[in-house]
Length: 394
Image (cartoon, rainbow, N blue to C red; front, side, top):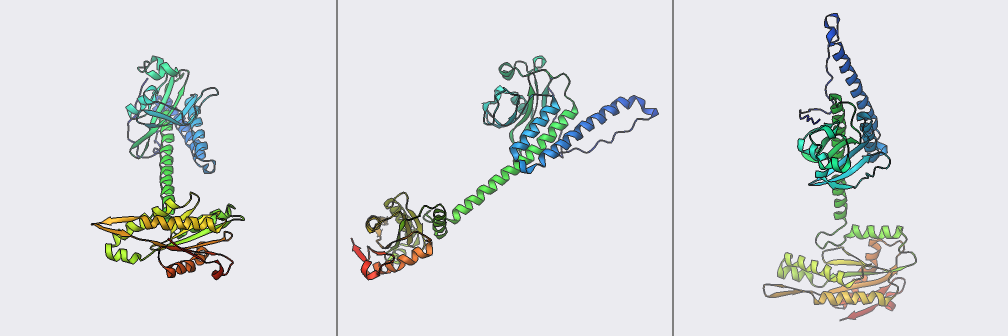
C-alpha cells in the first residue's frame, strides 16, 4: 500500500485532540474512543522516549541518532533504520541501525533510484508499504536488489532544501497496517532531526567562520604572510612542542631601501605591488622550514630555525639581498626597482619572542643602513658587536 500525507504541519508536536467521552447515549463510539486513547498512549510513549534521547547531549549526536533509529525500529516493528543524505542521484548513509550480518555502515553510498527513498522523495511526503510484493512498486529496482518487504520513510529537510530521508524497512511483510499514529511518530522524529541537523550546520558554519577569522588575524592581508601575531604564535607553539630545544636560530630583519621614493614616484598602488613581490622573492630565497612575516610597512622578519653557524645565516641573507635586487615592476615605460638592507643575528631560540628577536636585529639593520644600501650586517648574540660585525655588500 502507498500513502502520502502532505498535510501542512505547523508544529513539531500537534495539539491534543479533544475526544468526547462515551456515555449511555453514545455507546457505539466506545470502540473508536478506545482506539483513539491507545493511539494517544502510543504517541505519548514515543514523545517521552524521544525527549529522553534528545536530552542526552553529552552522549553526542551519533549516539542520539542511533537511539532514535532503534526507537523507530521498535515502534514500527522493522529491522533497519537509516538516516540518509541525498545529493543529486547519490544516496549516502549517515547513520544506520541494522541486524547483525546486514552490512550497512555510515558512508555507504548507492544510486538513489535503486532505493525506496526515491519513491518517498518523489511523493514529497511520508510513504509506507506493509507488503511490497503486493504493492504497486513491486517492480521497483530496490525490491529486486534487496527483497525488503516493508518500508516507511519521510523526506528530511534543512530549511527549504531536501537533506535526505529518515526511513525504516524490514525483510518480512508487516503483519498490520500502518496507522495515523505511525505517521505521527515518524513526523516527531523527523522534526527533531531537521532541527538538530540545522543547528549543527549553523554551529559548523559559525565555527568555520571563527576559524577563518582567527587565521586572518594571524595573516598580513597584503602579502598573505604572517603578521606579528602569527609569528608570535609560531614561536609559542614551537617552544611548547620542544622544537627549539638546544637549538640556535637565525633571525633576519629585511627593510627596503628608499621605499618612500617608490610610493612618491609611482604611487601607493605600485608600492603595494613592490611589497607583494618582495614577499614572494623572500619566500623563494628561504628554506621550507623558515618562517616569514611582515612586521612593518616595508619590513619583514624571517625566523631561521636550526641555523647553527654564521655561514648558514649569511648564506640565506645574501640570497634574499640578491633576489630582491633583481626584482622590478614596469609602470608606463618606467621601472620600479628596489634593494634591501638586512640585519642578521644568530641567537638562542630558548624563550624567544618576536620582540626579543626584533631587539636583536634592529640595531644590526641600522648598522647595515648606515654602511650603505643593498647589504647585510651579521652579529652573534653574546659577543661584543665590534668583534662580531660583518658587513657585506653585493
